[in-house]
Length: 488
Image (cartoon, rainbow, N blue to C red):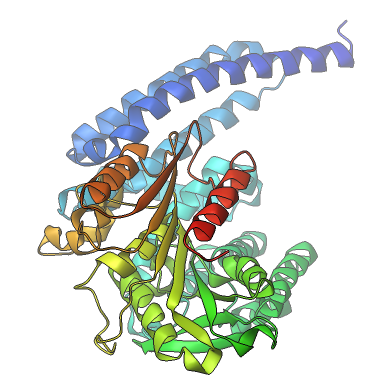
């Protein structure tokens, strides 16, 4: 007779053995799939499905290998694993039309047999037990993502400030009749928005959830996130620098104490990152306030982003240039020194910093073009340098008759002399933005006679600005660069 403890130990040992084999298979999959996504998604559907099936099969083979051993320990384990494998790979298939169009500019729909098979998953949407499955949740997110892309095109969202969120919240009741499932997805999208896009103009959606949800934990979390975010808007100046397409875009201005404001103050302007799809000026409030405490003026910029305003980086570039112009136009009102404006940003924010100085042809019609949008110093952490002919940014050119239009906002294609001094920081193991692209940009700019200080972080990933292994060095390089240019 096997005691309970021995049985549990055997089950744990078997699970660890299974997970080790699956990790090995996953590494092979990641190496074969992710670097080659543009080519794979460019295949015709039959070829694409065959490729996905070949990538899926090693996972199935390993799982089936463990079927017999698990039967006497946990008969539900292997069926659950196979279900999750199906959901993971069906999620890839679900997104095929979207990515195929991104990479080939050809619109396609899944064949009827494929779509019919995927539609069978709809029955699971109202099964609360499946909410514990990460792969199931990922599939549902993909499904709602594509549905929301069509939903948000309706006229009712034209004047919405949080277009994608509103679309999600309208879609959820259509597909989720089970109360627990419906509330989970309402909570999921509200929480994601508060964390990644901020609380601006979310009062109605939050209030509705707080008064209708039966889940006390969810209510407490959403209420806490909203209150914390809303409170962060207090204690500093908020000015609308531009209203476009019904959207009011704000600058969050953090002023030093009155003693410092007796003379013109240098300005540190923050552009948040987030791949031009997410981000909020709230992420930079702490740093902007910190500069104000040092006697500077700190400014966090709100700009249009894809998953909130349904825009592309072209609009974000226009906003970045408008923001710098507004600060110069209104310098006297806040004792700003228009000749000591520094722009800084991480990732996509770094791209916007460079675009303020480089994207000369991309301007808002309402801008006063005689006012320069070029900062006096540029600080870029893990920025994006090439947006053209890069598979990961094909979505930017989607729908453009002339794909080369992207070059107008691609720093690598806007090289010129006479730029302000710039600090470029980049990690060699950046998996979001290839290190080689940063190096190529710096070399080209230097050859043109520009003053570029470039620091390489060996082994560093993309997020060097907050990774504790590198953030201290980032801060140190920034401080020394400012000092060298007379700002510290």
